[in-house]
Length: 464
Image (tube, rainbow, N blue to C red; front, top):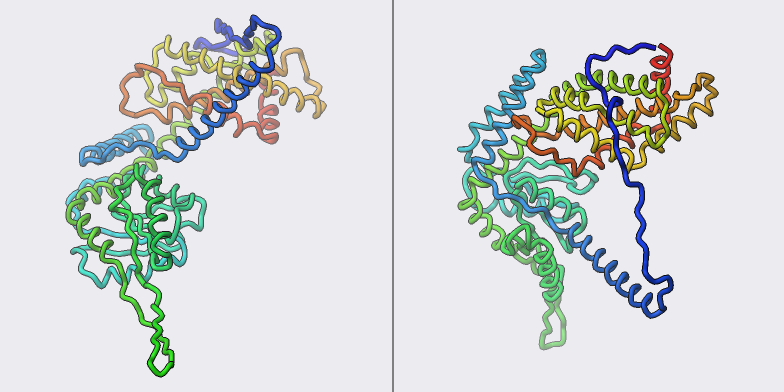
């Protein structure tokens, strides 16, 4: 079997030392029961504190940088850069629609028309409130739209509006919380409207408002959490006459929405530009992501043949020189040259030393995550169960080397896709999220059908 290689590969000269376990010795062999009790109490307390801390962190919204006109223009510029790159790397790709949409966004900073969306679950009073607000003179160039069934789907829907009125009729639910977190991250201005307050006694109403304000104190001002009654329930009136006759009737009550309409007038007067910037930012980000997805797809098509090339090289090297399972890392990890090749596709200018360091780091992660053993066992089990006769000494190692090389390459593709296009050089390689990427790619590719297909594709390369 011959393989012509014009670039250095990882299987030559990559040695990695990995600490598998460590041992701590205690000076005392026997601990008294009292000491164990203290330690148990400390552990219990720390565990409770950790769980509370995790709960707080989970419910704590991520910090959001205040939006400015320049930050919106920066996103539009980034979208234009992606389109220019797409036009250069894929001349046949039609980008005219994207360019037209970005141009429209650039002209939208002076827009005067605003859209207010009324959102919420079922039977929260959206239609009634919309009718009441339309009857009032809020501001010029204002459109009111109603969003139906906001929380029917698990996925949070996108709402194209400059301002959202989220209606609730009680405590915040998890769906409300997730929706408002997304609004906060997306620079989406919103007001929380506690409708049907007349259905609660004053003490209950005050308690609900206080709880909601505490939950949202890091997102919006208390003045943006407003209690109203768009359609109060009719009031039963009972009158006792002198002759002993009791008369009863109901009297309709006027709507109580003035606090909301007054707040809306202030926001529309003072925050009109900010509302427009928020909408422009969301549209620009959406266009940027869509264009980036097209670019990533094209680049991925270019990256896959390179990954396949090196996975066959790794397989050939491991087949020719079988190694122990633990040392399989040397043939399974991706080569420095492959890192450079993939970086070139994604315009990441890596030096050889950076590529080498990245290769070693990936190799360590593959071992630490236990993927060497998992892939070897899976492949070995398949070869045994399917009675394939071509089981030379290095077959399992060779297929495992190719498989792990592919996983590492696909993980790198995900990593490079997240990098900025305008970075002229890579000063520092941030791999804090790389273990999750490798694990995620492994989970996608560990299905039996995919592994079987990969083995069948690899075997012919070992017989050449």
